[in-house]
Image (cartoon, rainbow, N blue to C red; front, side, top):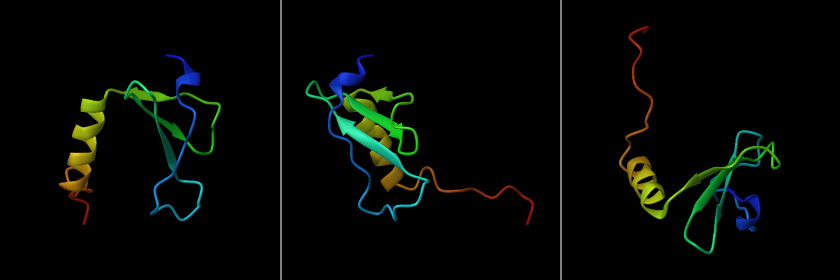
Length: 72
């Protein structure tokens, strides 16, 4: 993957500026890059537009909400 295809990175508007953030970038070909904001020269995960849309839909539907571990 070419890192140069991702040129403008942004954080969520919900980000409080703490160090636990990810950044995203949209390439001209529709690919979505995701990286750790603490390590901007580190690895970038790349997703197709369909993969990104499915992920966002899952987040909105609560599919990634924490679940009970049974330790309560």
